[in-house]
Image (cartoon, rainbow over all chains, first blue to last red; front, side):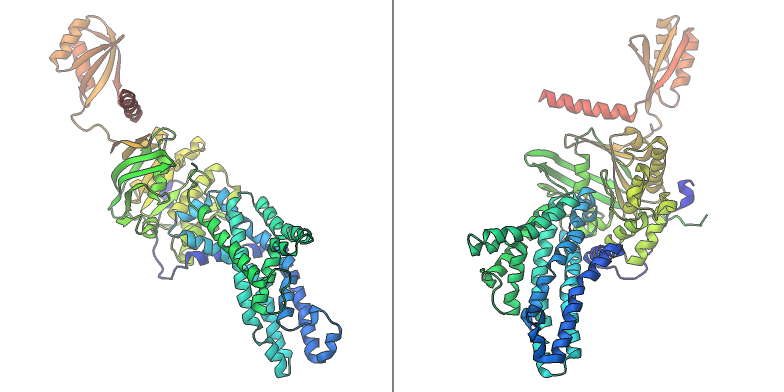
Length: 283
Length: 321
């Protein structure tokens, strides 16, 4: 069909409000992976520990002190027990964020999509915020949301004021912990994604950073316990003591771990600031 | 076929660039480039590495400029980059396809990022994909598109938010002859009938001749020329190349009597005559002098001639310096 027969109509504004650019980016990034059945399966599996923990909560509230005979962190329904639960979620965080986050910027860079985004009326902040919100969403989906769901379940099944009191602050503690650690994970992963153009390599770097430093720190701590500070996910978990209270999980003081987490966050932001540009200026 | 209305946008003064200077490290890429453009089709010409793509990036506000200002439809790119970018649609030469999306999803998504409400963006995506000729392929994954389809998809995403200006970077690159003709037809229609300002960056002079009314010629980061691509106006002169046999001095005298200047160029005579009546006057002079013409060929100064002359002049000036 010739061009003149196809016609062209200028845009007639419907009067509806446009979405914020970062939300448009985030919405697309969140909904697109949900079309994958494998990812839905992974998300479902990531909730299994929460279901187990829910069962324990139920029996603890029903049987009282009897459940303590089973022992261990599993039956701890206090803040430390919830921090331990967040620790069990670590493998899911590793896998899920590798799948979701590694291609977020690298794919755009490979296809010159970054320049395409930034040729629109949006800034680098909108872009990073939108991409970061995707990672935060999936991180919260396997950490914060299960904790909140467990607390809600706990409020429903507990009969006494003691149980309510035990669970009262946990949603807020979990929110603070997940926001701080989520921001750290997000900026580090986005920074890795902005460095590489091949998604598979970014995922590999992420796994090396997450699981590799865990193993390395275990070996190094045989020589000096303070070298636990090299453990990337370990520092994120140990920083949780600042929010949930209790004894440190390693030889590193929790406040130092929190500083390490904040340093990772700042490093990620610095790398992103240098890497997210519409044009790569090669000297 | 669905009936659509065609609206022409009001013409407005449009892009103003002043003293634009940019360098990659120490290497200058654009030097003191200044021009103003009306809303029409403008060809951005220059050899490879002359700074065409960099100039487009500067117009998009993508570069940290050393000096200079860019204003698009009254919006200063430095002060109000979002306002300026809302008025620009950019079609990149390299890449420009967001992976994992269908054609319509990609165009609608970029429409939303261009400041459109979601429903408007989706509706416009369908319309512009129909306009560029991708209506039947819009639900296919854009990754699987052929080169020609990719180019049209990139044009659609540049159009979706209904900008005032289209910046097209090598839009016919990698297209087969049919695809190229189709793309040129679209660009011509957009500039001539739909009221878009178009900046067409290319090294293909034929594309510029087909689409543009104005040209900017860049060479090593400097603006060599900025002018209109015009058909010879009434009263302009033209050159004719003539070859023949017979009484040449008599022929030259007849030409002189008719007010035409002639000069020898190897085997040929180059005659300068009025563009509208030149051939008739040359034939009359030949007839009057008994000179038998073997060849009478108008010698048009093409865009290619102009381009190469400008580039050669710039090279000569540089070598003298």
